[in-house]
Image 1 (cartoon, rainbow, N blue to C red):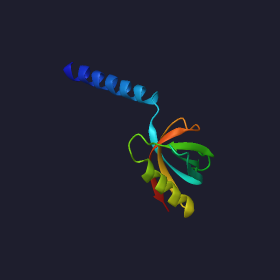
Image 2 (image 1 turned 45 degrees about the horizontal axis):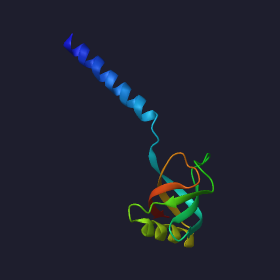
Image 3 (image 1 turned 135 degrees about the vertical axis):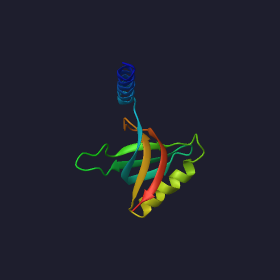
Image 4 (image 1 turned 90 degrees about the horizontal axis):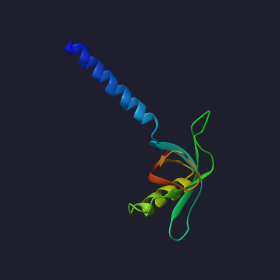
Length: 110
């Protein structure tokens, strides 16, 4: 009896965790090509397209590089390097992937 009650409790908790995680937007790494990168004076931004095939998550979306954590210049340098060298960039970004969504991290990749 005690084991079956414990099993029911565990299944219920797992079901709740799965149900709750499905409704929350999760940030994720996306590998992208960069078509534009720049600065507005107070913000850094990049225009990118996801490289996922056959259905990309986004195409030609303008993202703002996060300045609140003090790493905006570093992410701008990463985006500029990827753009100049025609390499990919990986960005850490929240869904939905609309224009002016904040990028929380950036990595240049080959």
